[in-house]
Image (cartoon, rainbow, N blue to C red; front, side):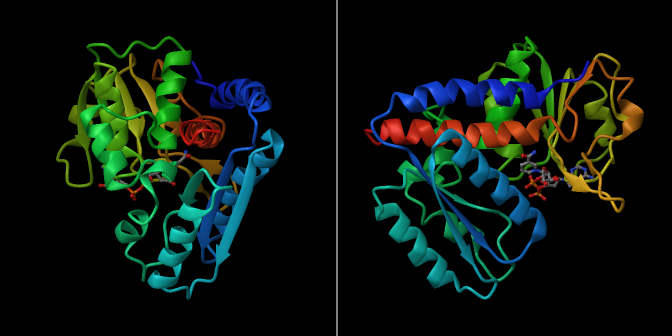
Length: 276
Ligand code: NAD
């Protein structure tokens, strides 16, 4: 079975359109992009386009690669004070000369739409959060929409970044799954993935996970996005696994559209929490 993220994303955006039409004032999202990374430019472009479609006010802050840490931080502090902006997203990865961790802490916790500040991550760990990182939130929504039960199941998350792997593991645990986190130092990775009911792939390794990594009963969520030399997009999952596993999310058309839908949903939620 193919888990269709695009259809679910469309449904979420349509529900949001109705909710947004009932608001007194448009929510505002600022997207900050530093540098010339072509993939990041495409992602930012589709985020802004979706804002326009939904009637969410958006502000793109496009900065040259040479921007300094101090300059970027002062822009974030200004955005924190801007009453037209409810949500702030810094497109990652930042160019290498930035201390990303420090940059992310400059976003006010009340506007931290991707849940990456220490306060947001702390709330997620304690289960005291009202929203979480967009991509893992989209994965949970995809599983729920397809009635894939998580309670008591063994979920393996491959990857431990703060933006995908770690919040993903916490959200799965909150759904009462038993969670194992694997990463680049895990020995005998297939020992874990082949015994899992659910595998979330967020390793960032194009088509790395072949059929042998999974049981035929596994549900596989593919978070990875890569552009192959012929221009096509693929994920971390190798095509040899498509016919073997019980269900998988495709790339494109799986988790990607849901990340954008949850960016919009979280922006709406932050605006409501900020009293709009
Ligand atoms: P990252 O590079 O920060 O983290 C990758 C993680 O995978 C690390 O924890 C590393 O230890 C682990 N890893 C790498 N190679 C491995 C291997 N061979 N075996 C086991 N573990 C391995 O990446 P990230 O920001 O978490 O993103 C992961 C992937 O998801 C990337 O392809 C990225 O483009 C994609 N992504 C997609 C969306 C979306 O909307 N679909 C959103 C964010 C990220």
